[in-house]
Length: 98
Image (cartoon, rainbow, N blue to C red; front, side, top):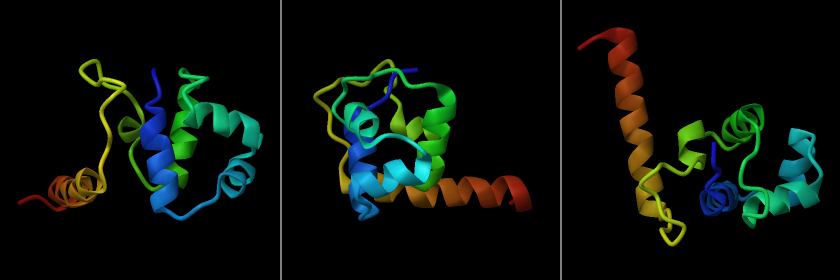
């Protein structure tokens, strides 16, 4: 599982959370979170990715690189905002039907 470090940092910043605050909340050293965000530790455990995703109110897949992703791609605010209604629609459909 390869972390998309740019998305991790982006999600943290749009939540207006400081790196130290997030690290403390997750029980991580700030230096480790910094390494995740800078791509120096590209393969965190699934448990850590899940914990970060829960904290940032996003899906685990939002923080991972797909096989077709390239390091140069940026995850824009517009793309992020488009994922929220899609997740809500899917959730509503599966729980309440059509």
